[in-house]
Length: 147
Image (cartoon, rainbow, N blue to C red; front, side):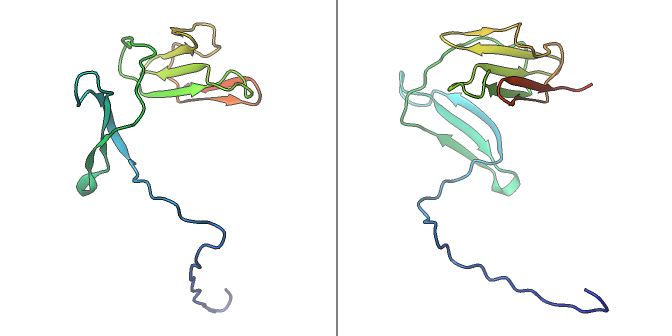
């Protein structure tokens, strides 16, 4: 605007034309913490109990599902992870090949298959924490870590 010209622009949203509102799903964001607990009868599938929100909007929610939970692997980790990712080896793969777990001073790479096993030849640097890991292009993994 030049010379002190001012204008007030009013915006009036219009109703949806080519979309149809189907359902509302309550958000769990931000999810502060979550635990998988057996709350029901013995043998019943576990429930996800999560602490959501902040301050006066905090809620404790129990997420129950209709499908049963299967433990693929149970193992002790060397500490509390800072972050966890799953990545494919190739863009064309149907399923993720690795679970990458970042700790304060290390990165653990697990292969996903019939069993879940630790991998040492993934190409990722294991002696430093990982800030992010992703598939780059068709078949390259990129790992971002602190200098």
